[in-house]
Length: 116
Image 1 (cartoon, rainbow, N blue to C red):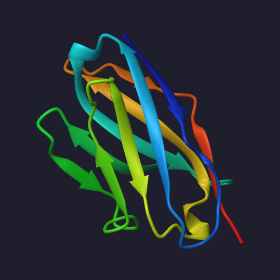
Image 2: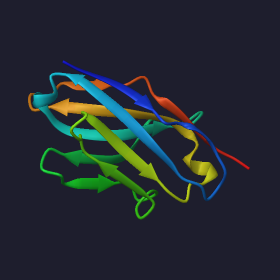
Image 3: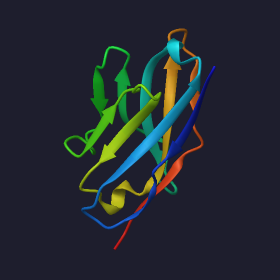
Image 4: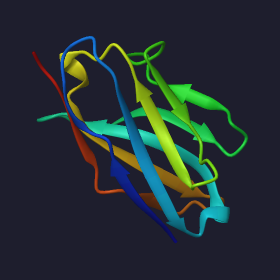
């Protein structure tokens, strides 16, 4: 089983940047896919970006060119670099991992608010 803890959220002005972190522990070796998802008020949770163990990345159209996902580093932490943030990026951001046998793990989320 994988345990995940997100951090790095906060209040930022439109056009600003944030870097979200997701610290992973537990069965790190079993992770196949890592990703970031978000849920805005009144909306369903949606995919933001994913990265596979082979470093293949996928992004939602709404964040392409602005967000960058990175896989686990030596400190077992993955990141989501978010640039040129806009009010519509306001949401709770969750990290998720999926193991090679299909088991999902979710963090508890970190709130990102984009407002002037």
